Image (cartoon, rainbow, N blue to C red; front, side, top):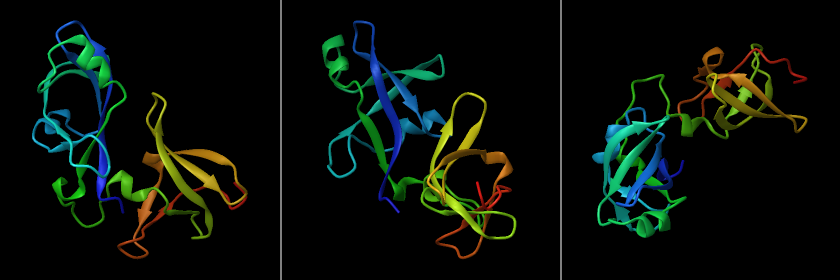
Length: 165
């Protein structure tokens, strides 16, 4: 499991006063103001974020120390990470989506049909991106899948895909 988790991304500058447009992957975007946000997966460079208001599914945000458009533009594409230790623990049977990537996807007969490659959302809900046994990518609605506890560290994701998917 990765020790740092992607939690947000600065997509672009906004206006002339140094604001940025930020895409949050957190369940509650306001949590970003409380986390220590790292600018990459290994280094110790951090930023502080203050959310201003939602804008078309993203957020306008102020980055501490950034006060003009040029400085904000330099941050375009910056991914923001948190240490896994900052995440709250989950109840038994619940998993963070990041922990499901790379897990086996099985059918109702518990036969492997593929591996979860990613979680996608094209606007109509979350989809599992599954790399099947024969190398194809297929999408399956997350709400129709079930995470089964074959063992705690490596749950399987049960779907109703046929073995030949």
